[in-house]
Length: 258
Image 1 (tube, rainbow, N blue to C red):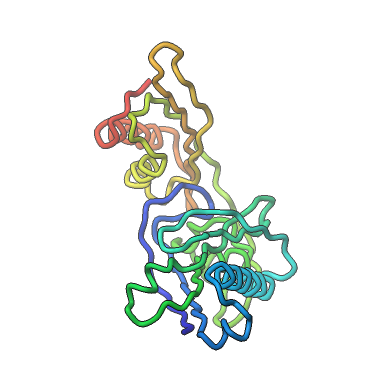
Image 2 (tube, rainbow, N blue to C red):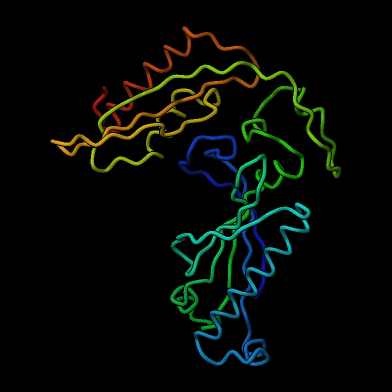
């Protein structure tokens, strides 16, 4: 009725200091027995759902406090295909809200599909890199994939050590503007940029949107920040990467450059 599993996750994701297309995740599930439901007086589906949701929030808030200390946290309504209702738990870290886990009440259809029970329960998924970022004060998720000994030599097995930043190389910023097709999604562009620039891309954000008053076409402008964790970048090499990004965006996403 209760278990934890860990594994690798590979997916398209936005580009910023806390997102990466490869990461490690721990997932947990807790299912309620008929005895537990009866003891709580949860006889209807609504009662059971309310019980599970409250137990979920109490348990995960307690875990967050145990891991991160007395941090400010909040619940955000979200959508996940296997839970309903679904939530994200965010904590205030580095002067911004950061998602640390997604969770929710397991869909009744999924439980029934096991042909074992109709018991209710909840599930969560916790990104282990984000957990480590908070515990060790690591500012950028890309550092976990760095080969720089200045990073790796700071840590010892079994100890929580505050990361001491070393020299941060200067950024190189480029913008890209284009008319979007109807099926455009920002994560598609993130995948294109990562395919070209790899770990040299630090951040990408939408800085402007324009809708043409006559054609009703939408134009987006994204700002891409390139920065190496290990060396200074030259404007010339980033110009070359940016041209490859522009070309691949046209070829793969069907955008029209401006």
